Image 1: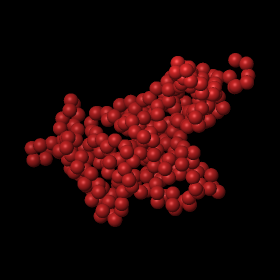
Image 2: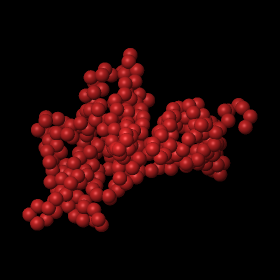
Image 3: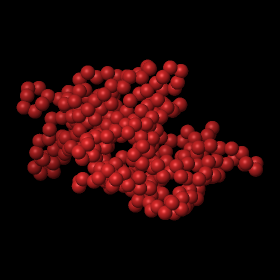
Image 4: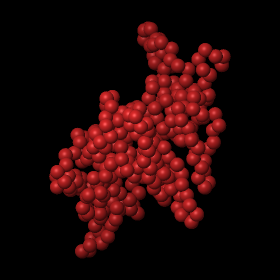
Length: 305
């Protein structure tokens, strides 16, 4: 990817998203003229943030990092730093944080802290210019949600705001548009071209491909590396009651992901090669992340097992 100057990067990161790439959340409900009404607010999903960073600076030129934070008498929080590489200056990091949520607290804090850190880089900052948008609501269980059919009204309010600011939205990135509210959990994991596939849970894609080729009577592909992932970075996050590890894992295909492992793992240090890695996906709000459930340390190729 050609090098860009800081101003160009800033302008591209701050470009407004397409209406289709935003999600709306019910922020508040109240009774007006005998019926319940709500206030809806738009927000950028973590997946949209990741896609924007990938497209502007390249996936190899940014990374995020999470740290727990707490103070006596206050709710625990998560702090996220988004680091971007600039030619001649190296990586520059901007931080922001969010309190843990009431439901699945750590994951909620991770999700919200990354969104706030993205705003520090200008991503989604234009949404702070939105006027109050009132919507009809309906009750679902014990929660209130935005009534179905409100999407057109919400998109129009957003586009009208951009028009008033004389701004043009970026082309739609193909993310699924959602309306959420209350404790209803949206599903924003559509399958689309260009979306990285979820890594195989057992790291055995190469073996399956070879077996399939042998059944078809064709020549199997060359032997793949004896590992599923290499740990490129690791850090320990210690909360009041829990310990987790944040890991950066590089697959044999060169792609990198961030994963978390519960507890302390002294063997998960940069350079460690993992075999038979079992990864599961978890979701809080709109952020999907990986959890390393189990693994084996692989021997380097050429050495005795």
